[in-house]
Image 1 (cartoon, rainbow, N blue to C red):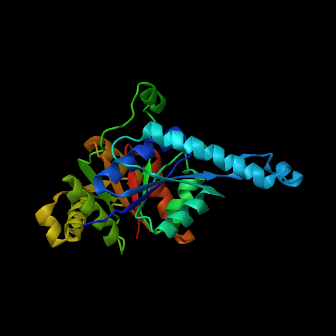
Image 2 (cartoon, helix red, strand yellow):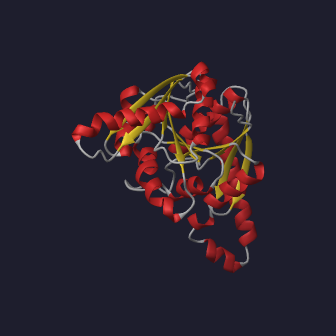
Image 3 (spheres, helix red, strand yellow):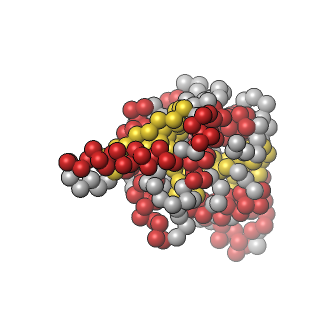
Length: 300
């Protein structure tokens, strides 16, 4: 069974950060894990920092920023925390990706939960630089939480949605391209499915089918490959389905998640090197950005 003892949730006070924090809180309650809420003071956001440094008041300037952000973090946690969990609050100074990664490594975090878009904004092609760098460099899984584009987060919050109930997982989707060393990601999928008594679907997308006449055979072959992935113990304890789609992987994954009302997508990511950027960018990035539910990215 997967053990989650320490959960790190970076907080930048954005709406996306609020949603991520709600998920982190729910997971901490379910797994009885320690939750750490981390805020990073980035001086690059203050264009007058260089001027202050030249006047000799730099240390005091940084202290005032840290103290102010610590108070804001305390208020954030008071407003959005429900139940028995009492998060540890941490305020660090530096660049966000580096601070998140170094803290997660030092604390041996089992999971990082973060919103995919924060104050820096985003475009339609790539994720924000912070989430991007963290997901590509951290050794532990990252749960990326993003409000689907067609939903209005501000409206929900204004209406009083505080997400004070647990995020129960009923349907989990594991996506695989049959690459080597994906066993760890599948283990996370099976463990989460068992933990929440959910239904697990193994999905493979055929991107290049030689001809319509060979489609049926290609689907049958892929289905057999999916079946081979299921460990013997998993067949006894987990409700498992298999699915094969044809088309662009990210489009089919998103469409399948929408059709089946998936609560969580789990994907293995290969990727700290430049050689993996195309695969990671073309599929995982777009599922994270455009998908209808949180995505758990597991390094393989």
